Length: 238
Image (cartoon, rainbow, N blue to C red):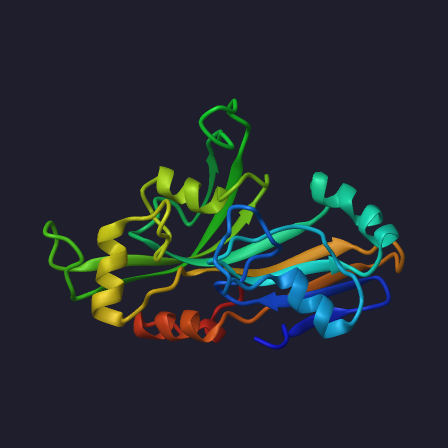
């Protein structure tokens, strides 16, 4: 990978489309010499140091925002710490959701030794589908939902863990998902990737003093999978 697609740029900030499989930055936990890191790719691409303002998971695609200098990073960080940054995701999940619009209010721990922290995820059900193939031994058909998601808090793997909590697993999630569903999608659709995409970001620009809205079209594998399930993403006003 030589370059990351640029979604937005001004004198202070730069947003790119992070592909599935790329980490945001180097970590001691990642020892694969072939691993790719967005920070290093972008620094080489633009020729100067950039400052990542947030993270998205390695198997998640979509918007990743950087500051071009430390002053710009410091100016926007309070919005990430509070509720000033709006980040919306698209996902395909198992089953029919109980409500067209709902909140998942369920505390999450960073790991086994940390106390629970408040965590809230809001979702909108965009569409549902039932396909005439069995993904388990219980039913002759399988049901899925296309959802728009807004995490009110920023806990690790929050969206994936919250949808696992209500048993509407994100398709392709190897850590918190449903292995039966993942194997079904691999076998029936040749789909090996997670269907979670960081689609839209909104923030108040601290220097230009205006609202900035950035969107990232879902990647090809997401659009193809949606099409196979009977959805054309351009039909939704999400």
